[in-house]
Amino acid sequence: MKKILIVIPLFLIAAEGFAAGQRAYVARSQNIPERAYQVNVLGSFWQTTSHYDHSGNEVALEEGEDFTKIDGEIAVRYGYSQRIEWRVGGRYRQNSGIANSSARELRSAGFESGEIGFKYAFARTGRAEYAVDLFTRIGTYENKTPATGSEIVLGDEGQEVGAGLFLSYYTSATHLISTQVHFVAPGNDLSQEVRWRAETAWRGRQWAAAIGVKGINALGNDPYGDSVSEKPTQDTPGTQLFNSINREVLSPFAAIYFAQKSWRVGFTYAQVMAGSSTDAGAESMITFTWTSKGKSMDREIEGNFKEYNVEASVVKVSPRSSFVKLDKGSANDIEKGMRFDIYKTNYFGGNILIASGVVFKVLVESAIIKILKIYKKIKIENGFVARGH
Image (cartoon, rainbow, N blue to C red; front, side):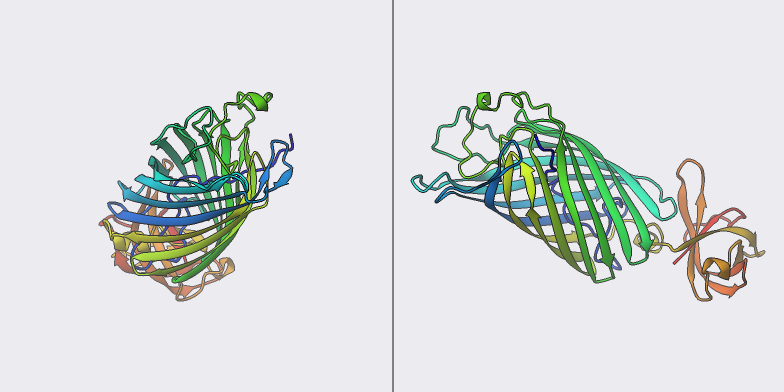
């Protein structure tokens, strides 16, 4: 069987962002602020245009054959701490399918599934940041087997669980590259899968754009992989999205976002270009995100969620901690007026924002920072990390 990649939504958190001062796009490797709540609302429309058989060959729709899927999702994220984030949500779905020109249209609608998730974000390392993610999604229905020909299923029944990793790399303050990979055990006796996504984004304070590709590699352990004809049938008129065998798809996508204060909206268009045991088609998605302020929001904005361009070490501190000297200067692209955040770090992931300031004087191999704001009543010492932007 030709190995292609498949696209399935990883989970119902499709929008990111945080309150006042946010950028229009935030990488999934970042958490929302501590003790903040974020509400994500998503609506999507899918239209099948053809099918891919079990060998990866594209098969045209029969005369009169049709399938559409509309999803409405809502999720709530909670920043338990700077590192830990929980989420819970649910998905409502409406399916409509016609098997061929002689068949009547079948519809189904209802609460398709609920999800609980957990994410742990590690301390940022230079220009890279990463987080681990766990989730479980539980279907709320039971599909009839064998097919009756009188209904259409909502989706793949049962429970799926997944574990994955988010990774982001900032090439500049306005551009980043993000990837995510999840190992997933789906329900409905489907093969285990590796679901992934890779994208590059250009972002400002209010507008952002992203392009990328997402997909799934089936691990090929479907119990009916060598005997397709023996798999019990389910009611899936007009579609092969459900009850598949080692499903795989490749789907490029593009997205645009707009943010204002505590909310953000986004629009994404994805086109399934190749696959096996699934459908070809297009999906349009609109998202809305609102985030509460949370604890120490000023600290979050000024510190952990900035995109830094340079990192240096504190080598000298004035008696009243009003000025600090760094071990890097103009030779490392540090300029007068550049802003710096001072952190206390350690080998165990500690990353405490202590103060912020501005470059007061710069030499070739050193720079002097004037401290303008104190976040923690901790004495600044030699060896502290200074990150500039």
